[in-house]
Length: 372
Picture 1: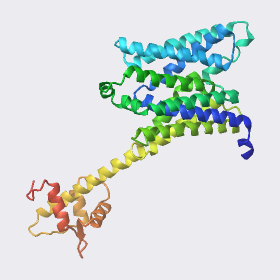
Picture 2 (picture 1 turned 120 degrees about the horizontal axis):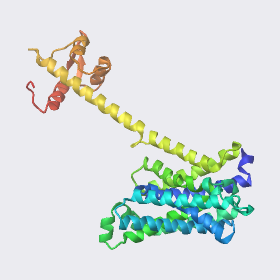
Picture 3 (picture 1 turned 30 degrees about the vertical axis):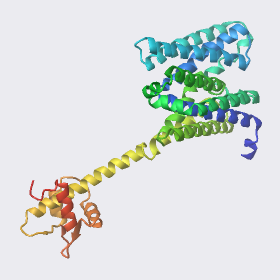
Picture 4 (picture 1 turned 45 degrees about the vertical axis):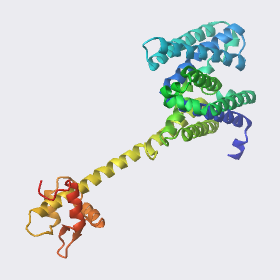
């Protein structure tokens, strides 16, 4: 394992994937909270025609040239999405869906045309569909690191403004902040994150790098700062884990493996998160139903006692079970009430209300001690 971790190629790929997870996780939090989860998908798909056009125009397969083309196409796609939202009746999801399908269709058309040409230089362009993390070079990691640091610095210095416009844009505009400028900054940063990740996971899977870490982090906290940090951490961990797994297991592509690691983190978060997790919700529902059943049993003991002239009156478990509407173990329920001091057990083995239990039953009855 130590020898594997010292492998230079693995170190390069893991560093690039960790940087991608760090940046996309942080920016994906805002896309998720602004209900623009499809925005990353639209921009990444819009980048494909830019990559192919950059190759057609320049004839170069340099990563810098192709990614500049991707960034340009991504910017055009973003501008078209915002223009459609502001000038038509289409909703955000509708506009993003239109741009996604149109740009991706054009990209595939151009890619098919280029691949049909008798030009060996076009080989390898299709790696931008699903990514090819193993082909990352130290220069690619360095450029990703510089872009990530610049993007995170912009996010840090505009934190208050972006936070305000994310949660309450109307109040923000009343204070003089521009929603157009905020949209421009956030979408611009997302475009940068997507462009840096195209080589690693490709245009098809890039949106998951933006949204999956944020969706997992959202399950664990209600605080924006904590969510951004958790989201970045999840993205980085998934990137490194995917790179290591793809190195250990032969013929396992790195990009899809990273996405599967993110999917695992999302599933764990959806199931185990303390407040929003499925397990937590199941436990809360069970506790609520059990508390209600105990209150119901207490009321039933109270009504049963009212039928007697002498108070307190005890009853055996069989009698209590006959008048009990709710199914379940009567012994467990009575012992729970006993542990809370609401019922007591006589020497004859009968169960009856204590003074505290009787007061609790009257309270549950709306404070009225008479029969309902």
